[in-house]
Every structure is written in structure tokens, then in C-alpha cells.
Image 1: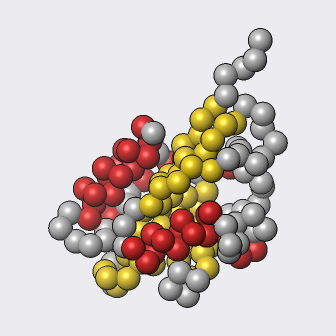
Image 2 (image 1 turned 135 degrees about the vertical axis):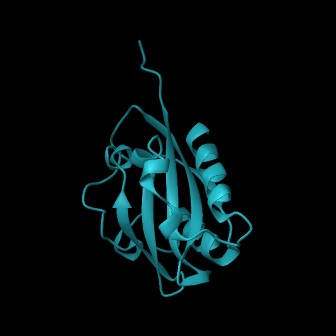
Length: 146
């Protein structure tokens, strides 16, 4: 999981000696290879719900259209109870990165498993509270059948 490993290393570098890095420290200029596979997610009501703020192009290519700006409570396959909800909630509650692998349920026959890393972020003015999540998605592509 090359991209998720890069994201974890970058998250650790950003946080330094702090519990959490600030979202303001996550600069797209420093992560060009991760941008298409990244999501920025707002944490709502202390981790009761989440809203997709930005969804990278590589994720949009394999996802249902129109998820940017939506809360996960508005998405049938992601609202609680679901692996996505549990993953996001665990990152908020645990103050640390969380990882999972999901079976792909979309229509693209080339897509295999989906690996996800979720990294909690604070706001600069509230350094001890998880206000955002940075998610990096890595896709296993199936080899074409001959």
C-alpha cells in the first residue's frame, strides 16, 4: 500500500511532537502524488456524522457521482452501521490513523479491493480536537482476463 504508507509518513511528519497535525498544515503542493487519491472530510457533531469536502479524481472515477458535499448519513452504503462510518468514527475517537480494506461494490469490473487510510486533523485554533479527516484511497486493479 504505497500511497497509504506515504500518507502515514506525511501525517507523522506534519504532527511532529503534537497529538494531531492541523488541517492548515496539509498543503497540496507537498503531496502531489496523493491528491487524486485523497479526500478531505469535515467531522460533524464530534464524530456523529461526516461531510465529504473534497474528493480526489481517482476516487471519483470509481465512485458514485455527486458525493462531494454530502454527509455520510445521506449515503446508503456509508451511514451507520457501516465499515466507512466505523473507520471514520474510530479515527476521531482514537486520535490516530485507521486503516481498512473494503470490497468494491461499484460497476467497474477492473476494480478489486479498496484500501483506505484515514488520518485525523485538528483545526489550528483547536489543536486538541479532531475537526477533519484526510483519507487516502488505494485501489487494487484486477488484471484483465484473456
